Amino acid sequence: MDNMDTANLGVMSGIIISIGLFAMIFGIVYLYKRERMAMIERGMDPRRYKPQSAPYQTLKWGLLLIGAGAGLFLAYILDRTVFASQEDNAAIYFSLIAIFGGLGLFASYRIEKKEVANKVEQE
Image 1 (cartoon, rainbow, N blue to C red):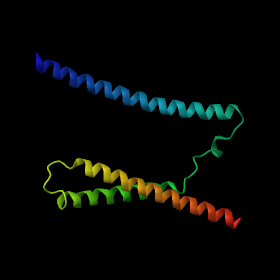
Image 2: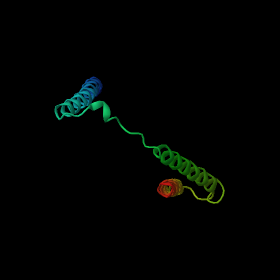
Image 3: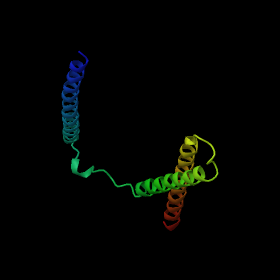
């Protein structure tokens, strides 16, 4: 009886996942077309409203990942040297990843703020 329930569950999950994937793709395409039609009805040109690039977005992600990587590396070093006698040191990893990731985001903020100030001064 248990094997039969497991087999039915596997078949049902495959069907549900397939239907969900189809519904998600259909919904995205439908809403995209509906948005474009609404823009045309209002007299707007949909080609003019393309997503604008965010020049500092890659800087922000880069510094976040560099900070998280540095935090992970420092946590590994501390785990192997300073806290080697303790058994469970998972909190060190999470805290240092969060601290250094936050420092990366803060550095990104400072760089963006400085660039905006320089642009304002030049104008």
